[in-house]
Amino acid sequence: MAAEWDRFVSCSRQPSFLFKRAYMDYHADRFADYSLVARRRGSIMAVLPAERDGKRNIVTSHRGLTYGGWITPQRHFNAATMLSVFERAIEFMRRDNAESLIYTPIPYIYTVQPAEEDRYALFCLGARQTGCGLSSAIRLHSPAPLNESTRQATTLARRNGVEVAESVEWSVFWQMLTVCLAERHDVKPTHSLEEMLLLRERFPENIRLFMAYAGGCPEAGAVVYVTPQVVHTQYMATTPKGRAIKALALLIRVLAERFAPTHHYLDFGVSTENSGRTLNRGLLLQKSGQGGLGVACPVFELGI
Image 1 (cartoon, one colour):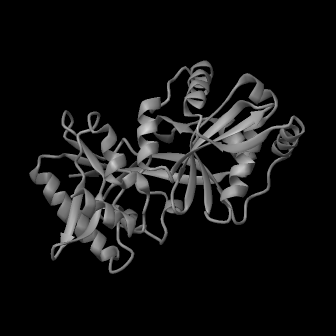
Image 2 (cartoon, helix red, strand yellow):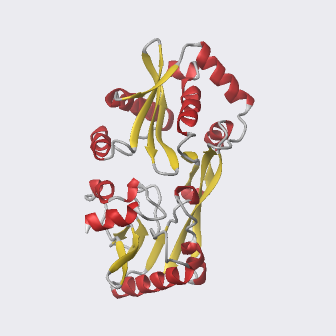
Image 3 (cartoon, one colour):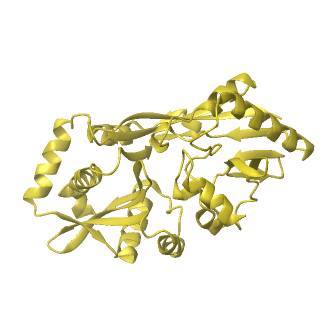
């Protein structure tokens, strides 16, 4: 069904490449795929990227993706239809001995049309909210003002001769990223370099690398995921020198200026941990300093 699934996603209200099978299936060895398809008179009317935790008999929005709820068409689909889809899905999962559904709606900034019928259906069906991440995004057409610290950092970067360009130096950036994450957070990148290069090969227009150079040397970089509405910074990293000369601040400003004519938002991702209960205030301050404002990312649990 891959081709049929992908055609539906491309014409949906949530047409992100993350929901294409070539992205979802690259890590099929890690997740027990339990994606659902709702049909009416033979035609797809909605799809749900999902997985099954067999040990706990729980179905979840696919954890290999940044977000993901029901993907819905742009026409002939309303809240009554969404309720019917949820009800049939619950019946299906109940017959399959699932006990609950952990559901992560798609943030509104990623939809090309309003698409929050699923949140209403969850309320009607008695779902409870179990978490809420907080992302930060810049509205590129009318951005919030930068704070003084960010303006000074951008000016300093330009004075230090920092230049930003799209790059193909993936191995260079991955080394920078690996060192940066290990030193500052004691973690590794979610993707290996080999995985990212595979995904980049499959989606060259959607997965892109931008680097900030000083004197010809890379001092900061960002991997961005490009969807119809949003440019998302999947990874960002700097060298110690890059931090000193504020290379990343300028890189972000250049990204915002570059994509403003074609996209609505630049999304920095969440600044929360522990299902949203822990707020990383330092990380949030960096993002808000660039003009990033809050986008809630709730998680719901629905008993089956």
